[in-house]
Length: 418
Length: 74
Image (cartoon, rainbow over all chains, first blue to last red; front, side, top):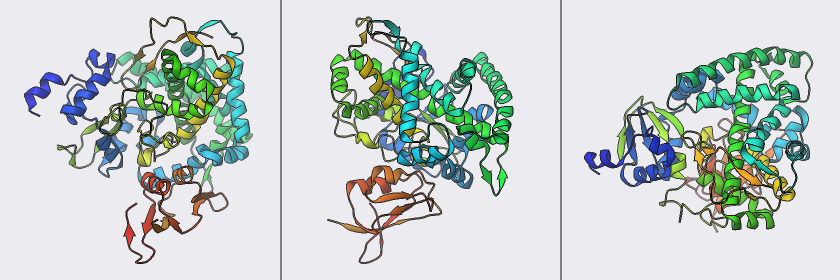
């Protein structure tokens, strides 16, 4: 592909038209410029499934530099920016608490709502508590009234926070998420994120000390009493992990729930199929994550020149791994634009593992720590809502919900009749 | 049917439990030892085992030919 043609067809990532319809842009990238330097973000873009997957595993593609720059101000020394022995140590500590059957047993000894049943109960109770005031036939905004709050309430509950603090906690978290998604570098969004982080530190620091003095069965107590070579972790490290867990267990989970219901309700036969066959819930979550991943891209920095996608990315370059594009690559998936509950080229049961066919949780060493937790949480909420409101429908089918955002992308509003 | 010998490097393993999620009949997390154990060291190379090996986040699982002892790809 010649350079002039590329310039004609490839828009800057930060062009507003891309955020309005990123998938047409990604299709152009996949077909004409699978490795492409985008001056608007000063980064190389990878868009094909095979290339994105390979980049996640490439030894010269590190998370350290770019995530330290992007999220270090929020999380401190965060898991995404850790590499090597330090990252492996934290993963060994945390992984068992967030994985499969082990998750439940581990939590039984360490944190609130520990066994699988208690975890299910916790999510279920939260879903019912918030939805409990709604009756069949009521009109609500499923995203604003439920999905934006529910996962945060569940996480706050697991952290053992008082209910009276939930709203403030949610506001701090939302400011941080806006900071993390601030691809356009809006200075106000940036400052709000920093301010929220400072306030959150001030809130969590004494709380951690209190949990050390009198540990409970909550997740903060688990982290606050963790020891390395017999020494308690620094409180800053505990705060970092708490904030990361909040992030991984809330915002993207809520976005996934909203995206899922927007698709099921927009294509009513999908809603009916899942409602009538709950074995399809996992498939529905998986297809939602493939077509509408809440986080659309991950970033890396090259430590040396990398040959990939028929081109060369120089050393010390930022690389955007466009997982949302990879998930719709027709080189990998048949009819990739179709939401297919019975798709045979995706092992839906593996979507939440690093062996998955889609890349919505990343891949390889930094595969999302909370993926299996998210699966459980979304499954419980979906089943709960299908049980409680089997006739749910869009308030205005003539105005289908619209996804918004570039780095993080989701429907912002979903008016429904329960 | 292809049979392979399977090995998990305990130093590389970060307890992601990816393998035990994908192929629970073969990989079992041993809480007491804090590590994943292989149920049978010589196993049939099924699609699930392939996926577990290829998907291991830190490439801690390796395969060998049971007759020659040589390493092999999944």
